[in-house]
Length: 104
Image (cartoon, rainbow, N blue to C red; front, side, top):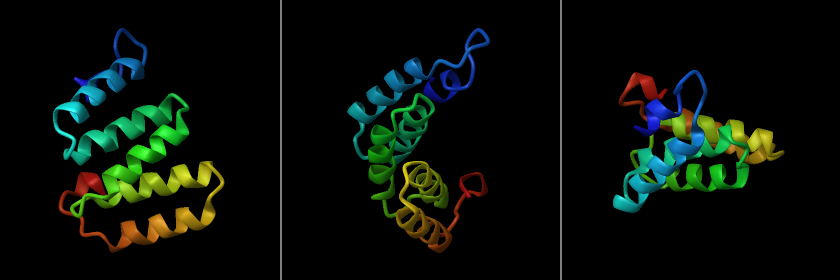
């Protein structure tokens, strides 16, 4: 439900509900990196940048993390004033194998 909720409910984005869903997903399976990635996006949309960065970092610890993880993290680091970190994440994203084109 988190991915759907983060889109639109009754014409309004409900990131609060999405965050609750992703929090539950992380609690049920702390190894599911996709849940951290999605929760990072929801945190970012709500302006919770440090929490978002922490989730992007956690998602990036997965050896199979898709390039998208690092590109999104790079964008966030730019917003937070860390151009060196953004450059490193962009380079890491470019090094990653893309197994699913949607995650590029």
